[in-house]
Amino acid sequence: MEKIVSLCKRRGFVFQNSEIYGGVNGIWDLGPLGVALANNIKKEWWNSTVLLRDDVVGLDSSILYHSKVWEASGHLKSFTDPLVECKICHERFRADHKKEIEEHGKTHSKSQWTDVKHFNLMFKTFLGPIEDDKNKTYLRPETAQGIFINFENVLSTTRVKIPFGIAQIGKGFRNEITTGNFLFRVREFEMMELEFFTEPGKDSKWFDYWRKERLKWYLNLGIKKKNIKLVDLPKEDIAHYSKGTSEIWYNWPFMGFSELEGIANRGNYDLTQHSKLSGKELSYHDEESKKRFIPYVIEPSVGVGRAILAFLIDAYSEEGDRIVLKLHPKLSPIKAAVFPLLANKLPLVKMARDIYDNLKESIKDSIAFDDRGNIGKRYYSQDEIGTPFCITVDFQSLEDDTVTVRDRDTTKQERVKVNNLVSYIQRIINK
Ligand code: ATP
Image (tube, rainbow, N blue to C red; front, side):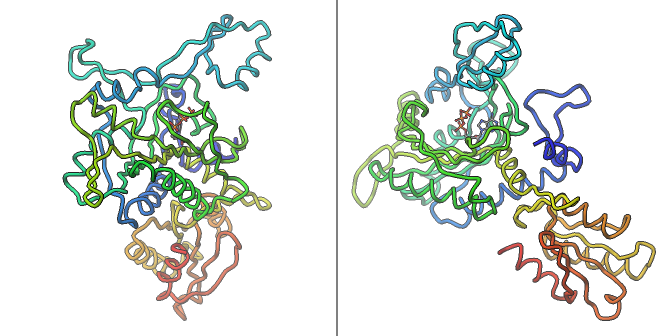
């Protein structure tokens, strides 16, 4: 884990927020490579969840909602974690995080705990200049409610028919009692959430479908089978609204198998609640069966940062003194790097520049150009950030219009015609 954190900082994947002021706990910024990796993850999620399907549409709702939303959803009352405080040092912990409490007990032998309090995780704020109860609202802790309150809008403006889904990627905020393990538990994070609406009675089938579909997504993007699994949660561990929850667990180096993504059957709790409090009927009329019902909803939900962490950990490997991020090429922040063999030979530099410009234009993705140091160092530098191909222009290139293409994982080199480079790279990226 330390190696990954240090790589992230050294190469500009992740920076600590407000670092020049000493940093803020549980808040991180994405650097140039981090934002590229995050965008690629979000693109893959959006493609598989929305674009390549004909039964899911997209949405982008705001972060601030009417405060009634949180009353209806139950978050005001129940979005809490159990909190205990050590009476000696006043450090606070989550009462259900037994391991952390045990660790604390070891170093503070006299630690005595306060009674368990329920701490609401939502960040409070005010709409407008008057800070009173009437104007109080919250930063959303999940994007899902933005989907439920727009359910009717989507129904009336699109041609969706049940079963269908509404997907959204956006920020969520949770004032976690304790943060830690780098991007694993933070206070501000982007989420990728799908609410898939079904007829009651068909919910179990769709719940099962999305459990399997989501697991497949990670495996297709290269997560090793041994490091990921689906787990069905026992009834006592699931949220107040849920009729069943599964989780996709990843084998984290700092805590073993634990949640990467949640997949919940939320029943019709949310739409029913919003109908009650808003007075607007949020139901669906099925034209074929002539039935009217409040749909059930299946929700796969994952944090972008937690997914970044899983992909980075899974891809990280050391081979001799070489550090390689074996990311799926679709996720790699930089798709290819172009090098002139020697930086001071003008014809080599010019040809490499032309190839670089052409690749950027044709692949429409991030391509690197590097003429510093020796070729070995340039390879090393690209391996560490997961660039799948390094393309070198050498003296033979000037004669026969071929270049060497070195594969990140095998380090094998192949001579490829310059004219074929774009299709060569695209074939492997899209595999
Ligand atoms: P926990 O019980 O661990 O606090 P949760 O069950 O409340 O988490 P969900 O509400 O299911 O979490 O959140 C959906 C997804 O959002 C999680 O699977 C995770 O990927 C991500 N997530 C939730 N909380 C955080 C956080 N504090 N930091 C980063 N990602 C988070």
